[in-house]
Image (cartoon, rainbow, N blue to C red; front, side, top):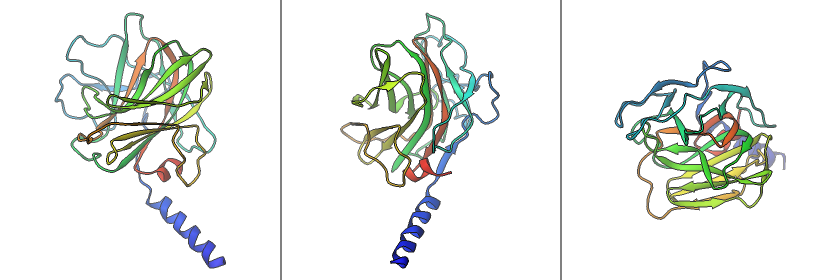
Length: 254
């Protein structure tokens, strides 16, 4: 019996050690109150700005508003990613939204397999009645083409979260409190052409059942080249503690 338990412990340890955190510390070098964007794309095919936040290029009119700024630290019990957050809000009324994108890799580096993006979010207000996406993985680092995304909607004094991939949507059944820090995990499965959403999940070794799933027909082709935030004038709060991994073990690890 002791040998069996020891073997199981060794397997679990090996699994965690093999988990790869592909990116974290997304606000490295930022101080609270400083703009997060350190560059700006000026053309659709501009070279990727790796490991920094950049202003997204618009082929039409330029986006209105300034870069979001680094804000207060968020925390969630058991989640080990630390650091400052990004402050949502502060856009002028005429600005529908303003996107910022964090560059990962160009080409097809992240175009097969499964990837996870985890983060903490705390909305102090959310006035949008319809579904508003606020973060996504992006297939284009310059123009911010969403590959899979997380959205939310106003439910009176609460929020409802959901997930989308291309034209498909899936919404969680529960509602969640404003002014509360939530742990969100977005999973992109290239083989299934599927996006899954986990909300305030227990951080245990085994991946839980997702709270929402969206599946698109066909095959995902373009790889994930960046992580895009959409700052809007109809919600406010903080988002941060990002971690991009290739496994659930990478989310729960140190």
